[in-house]
Image (cartoon, rainbow, N blue to C red):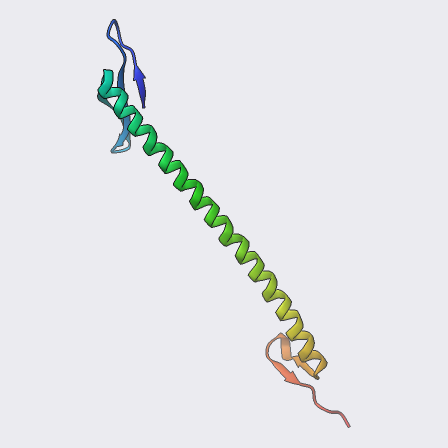
Length: 104
């Protein structure tokens, strides 16, 4: 997107867009019309950039919350395993928890 100068003619505004995988330049106009459309396009680009930044921030917050949750789950698992072990249980073949037999 931008202003182009070709030959002796004044500047005119064009837009680039994809059509079927190819980039196609679209003539918009010159003078006030071109300036107004250029301003609208700039505002749309700024709005999209702001939305992308907000999305990235939200995704980072979700990742941070997931990291905290995983850390909490790991701590709970350690406490649960320690409690079961101290209560006389063991993991049978690395599977289910079973109470140890009392040997006489």
